[in-house]
Structure formats: structure tokens, C-alpha cells
Image 1 (cartoon, rainbow, N blue to C red):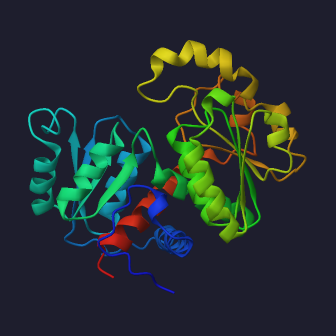
Image 2: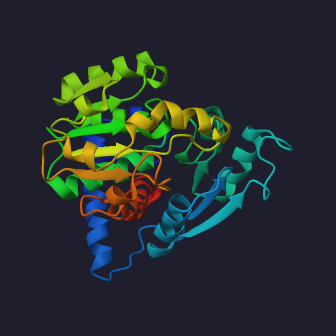
Length: 315
């Protein structure tokens, strides 16, 4: 059943229901099928989208740009040196200017508060392309990849190994808890996600039929996992912490031994990319048949396209 998501922001998946997440995933599948059959559409015809980037990007920038183009829209890249966001001009003033010229705004940057201020004043949908707190469009691509590999989401076990309080780990926990996935984070206790968010996701999981667990032992965490997920050990802006993180997180490296510890031959490996091979994942796992990281990267395009079509599209 179609969902009316017109005019909605996507700041975090906390604001989307289970049904709404499933709707976006189903729409993603439809748009992906259409693209693979060679069909280009007009669902974003005459729509203009502003792409604000404080942080560099490969997948997010390319996905938003290509998604707009393929559905007849236009995407305008606005890098940190192109506009005065937050230092020569108040965020709320930039938001009100862009909102009068564009139909939607993507923001990829540092502070979640900046994203929220853009959304409060723009008057058009604002989408989170990544902040220090959340990465919802990545989580949607991850869920789509899981669905493609296993047919459905409810009842799957997904284990995230590494920095349990980073934006990807938290966004996956939110999304997984709403679609019935059994989600486990394996992390040093110093990098556990916020307790308040864990409790919220546990409550979501009670409704969806999933579960949420946080633990320190990576081998215990991956038992029975359909997918093992990891991310870089120091996120953008935390490069000065990398030496300490390598020492802390070395036991959480995803290697062939950890992959075999799932006990399932069908287990897959996921990573949001870019990967630092030799740190969070070995070359052997990254290049193995179990690795679905490039399917996952492609799915950024289809899920981002679905988010834009659902919130500002001509449907």
C-alpha cells in the first residue's frame, strides 16, 4: 500500500515507521528494476535539489546526482567553499534562501543540529546524507542489500563489529529494530552506543519481532549471523584517534576466522565504504564471495532515489 511521504524530511530513521521503511525499500526495488531494464523516468521532472557537502563523499554525492538525473531532475553541488553556511550567514538564513529556489536539500556534514536547523527553516524536505550522529540513507541501502540476499528481513541476524557508537552502527540499530531484524553490536564497552537509544530500539524490536543486544565478545556476537557489518575505526573528523582505535579495536577485525564463526555458509559481509583494508577488515574477506559491499554501494543510488521520489516526486 502506497504511503504518503510527500514533504517529509529524513533526518534519522527514528522518525519513520516500520511500514514507511518497508515502503521505501519496496519503491527502491521497483526503481532499481526499472533502471536495469533501461527505463529512465520523469518522477523528479522539473525538481531541483541542493546538495550541501561539508564532508567529502563518493557514494552519497554520486547517488543523489545520478538519481536526480535519471528521473529528470537537477542536482546542484554546494561544497563548503561554495556557500556561507554557518560562518558568513546563519544556517537558518541559508535554509530560507535555498528553500525558495530548490525542491529539496541534502546535507552531509558534521553536526546533526545543523541539519535540524536547515529542516526547521527551509520549507522543503531535507535529507541526511550523513552527520556525526546518523546516516539513514546508508542504513536503507544496507537493509535493501539484506533483503536481496535473503528474501525478507524479519528474523535475520545482523552483527555490527567495531565502533558501536558511530553514525552507521546507530542508524542500523534503528532501522533493524523497526523491521524485525535481530541486531547485535560487538564493541568495546567504551564505544557502546548511548543507552537511551538502545532502550528505544529495544522497544521498537519488541513490536517488530526483532531484538537488540550489545556485547563485547565479537565471536559470541557473530554466532548465527546472516551478515557481519563493520566500518572504519576512526570516522571523519576523528583521524587523530586512529592510533588508539587500532589498539582498542584490533580484536574486532573482520577476518576469515570471524566470518567462519557465524556457523552459516550463507553469511555475507557488509561495509559502508570506504574501507581501510588491514584494519577493520582483511583483504581476504573484502574480496571474498561473501562480500556484498559493491552491491551495497550501488543500492545507495536506488534507496536515495526512492527517498527523493517519495518525498518530492511527481507521483
